[in-house]
Length: 120
Length: 189
Image (cartoon, rainbow over all chains, first blue to last red; front, side, top):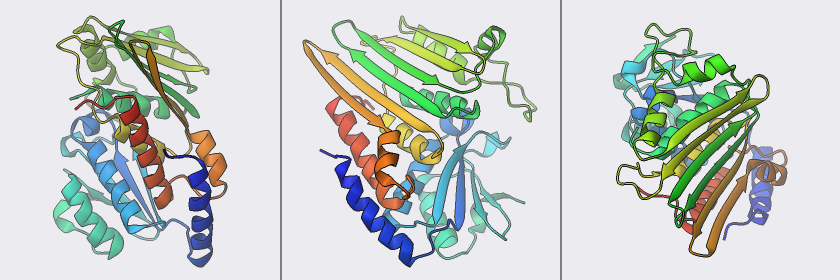
């Protein structure tokens, strides 16, 4: 059984970690979660980002959900927002593509051109 | 939408867009009464009576940037409830919040499966750290009652200054939800 007491251990470890590293978020990932995005598999895309963040212990990446932005035909859509850089929008995302974007773009800073549908 | 958990996600997103601070989600299965009920309640901006009616119209949306004015979320959910002797009702009050209740005949052949409801909860909790989620899963069968409660207020209190979207916390919440769903037999795929 998972208990809230376990959170205390996580909290202590996290506080140690946050002291050592600069924990301000470096990258914001926004997953489009409007009706059409959901119907096209946006929840699996979201879940894959969360699994990758947990697995790689990336405490400088924040993932959020948002409504649609008028790119319905390209769903599921994901924005990668980084201070001082152009926002990259990836379209037609799948869990497999998410893992590639995490490894190449978020970890190594190289945009995955093949999946880009918009920039601004 | 392939299952009920995706409809729940869609409704959660509506509540968040209505600026809610709290979301109460209750899913209750009563096998003896052949009942499955999903209730999503928020403290968002609320809707007028006219808007409640409009929300059930497939050619209505509040999203102003859209060229094609369609909003299929609620109408599809309602239809999926009605095809299995169920119904969907919305109650709302301006500046107070909205409550959506979907009711299904549990063993109806056309009832959609619940689906990966855990992924709906985890994604929404981590994707909207500013909202507090009060989740309750209940299963009544014969004389037994199984219950799972998850309240992000309690989690945030334990965490103090550590954010709820911290990697280890995500794993913790994921596992906690999975356990609760297993104990209440809520996941059907």
